[in-house]
Image (tube, rainbow, N blue to C red; front, side, top):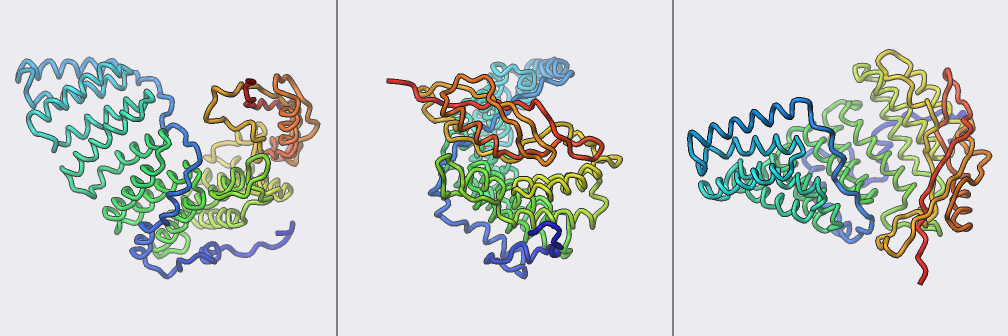
Length: 453
């Protein structure tokens, strides 16, 4: 769109034009479509997934007190019922959970296993307590990077859950999420897709008439596809979820927000990292020079919906305008981006909007690094080098006055990083509502150099 042109009013029909699913389809029919993602999707799984584990927060201040209380409860149960009684199962699980929160994984593992042994001795494999203990063990193994062992525990937990509560019980969705995360970490994408399909089947069965809950579950499923680099497939699911949300009867309802953001996000990721079957250049990125405008259309519709719902809060409305500015900067429409950033800064300045810290320093929006920056699977055959570049982020978000700083990388690699950064675009720093240049910005990039013979 040319600068100054009047934007057309955004509608859901306009966003989904060209797609095969019509807006008049009822929610149940759309749900059936969700179970029919192309089998060909399972053939393209080349993107390396990140580990599902995240750094743990420190134990809460009362963790020690909870641990002492759980130990006391178990001791009382053992004294009253004996060490092999079924009544010990819940105290053992409570103690294991307390030990897990206190970072005592050895003690937690011991007590989860003891609880499992008592359940299996007294009740067999059909018990809610067995599911809880197996899930706890699965979490411990995942946190410690043993994803094979974690997946085994979670498969057993799912089997027990289905025996107790039925094949499609919704309580298993948390277990399925954890199992999928392990399969992603292991690079087992066939299993990821199989469990995703099962999760969708469970969600549809459990929440088919509960649109808000169904939308949440399907959005989570779309997120798994994004984490595998399956941006086109994820976007199909976001779009179908959007159509389900629209069946609530109101054209602009808040449940449409997250699917719309998902549409935009997948277009952004696809532009930065390439398609599922990308046309790639020498640097390993998609050769498209602009992201698909459907992403901006979705963001404008988000703003329309939020403006129609003042109860959504100033923070959400400000975030939407910030996202629109980032999108325009990504697309290279710098002047339009700065205009949107001004609106976002003003919105963030409002009471209860969260403040303008998003504009305290430049934020990188667009950067396509050289292929040598991509971590190779056989890292033992490569040496890590680094390149540091120093530059100014101008008030329009472009990079100026780039100079090469310290580096131990080959000259060719350093030049490629320098060239890529010169083309980068940033959300600029703002001062009193106006974009401002920032000098002395540093960027450090890692380069993987093949080892010699």
